[in-house]
Image (cartoon, rainbow, N blue to C red; front, side, top):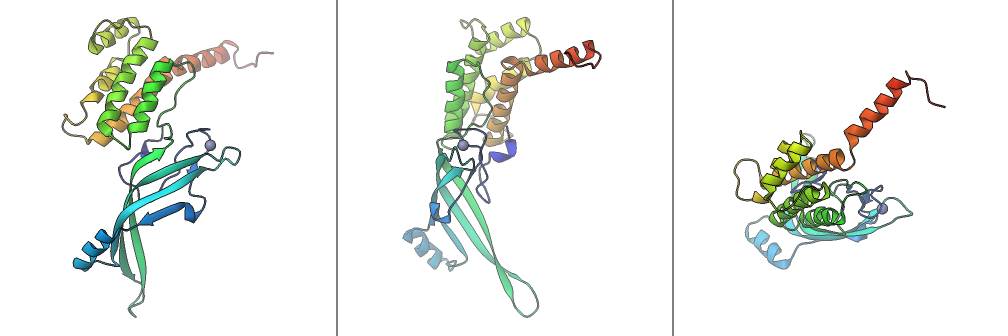
Length: 244
Ligand SMILES: [Zn+2]
């Protein structure tokens, strides 16, 4: 997971991963496929404030396309933008360049790219909840956080932890069976509380929880550490001689 990719605001549209092939990156291929529009009511307000020409606020919409030509998936993007234009003087003869600072706030990417890697073999119920959380990321952060919490329940189902008890009890049950993961699960247990906690912004908190979920999936479903230890063990056992 690329944590830096997921933000509230962007100064330019980044290259999100393709939701179809997951290998390619999305980009704006043709300028005409990306539009910005300032409505009249904004123009009037900017006029009144004597800011017309210095800044603009409005909506943007466009199509991003996968760079992998065989895939070529199209993803619709939309949201709100603001831009401010500033004169930057180059020299003492009053020659200047205009620097524009854009801010894009995405309200929707459709279809939505995956924020975390989903390993093969994960239960369909858990995949559905994680994908649901990704879908809601730009749309409704509170609902996104709730989906992540449900995904945590579904992950414990996948790990065959009996589900008659509370999530806190189930985490303790799993800790007895396979120790070392309680802090991660406890953090994910609290993710549903977005909006009711203090300190870190909700946005960063949800990103952290996506990151923890990805780690839990790698360790407990993909069994990454165990596989790496087995590979290392095999090399050590053969004393570095490749097996025929
Ligand atoms: Zn693609």
